[in-house]
Length: 113
Image (tube, rainbow, N blue to C red; front, side, top):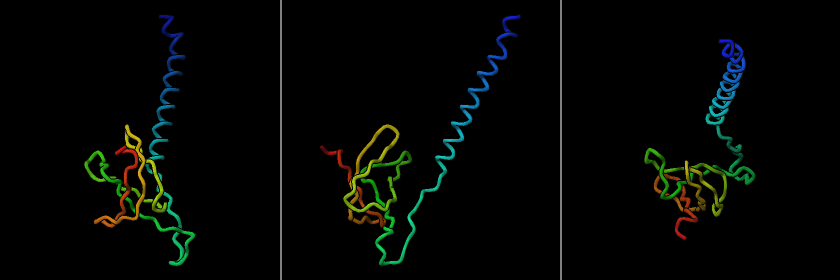
């Protein structure tokens, strides 16, 4: 019984450290997931220093629930962006092609090579 009582403080210390790391990881994930996206300030209509945010639909890409993937960005058409899903990294080129829902098309770059 003496071995157990001598090892108890070390065991409780390791358990407390593991719980502290788990709690810190949980809090960090919650904060990172709920942080609001930063949008650029919108200026007067003729001001080119503050580009307007546009919504793009990533063509032939769906979410887990079956809906289309849409992103909002201020980047101009012709820019290649990277989209990361759970197990896949793809590149898309932003275009000026309007879609029926008011968004613009983002075409996959590497999918058809």
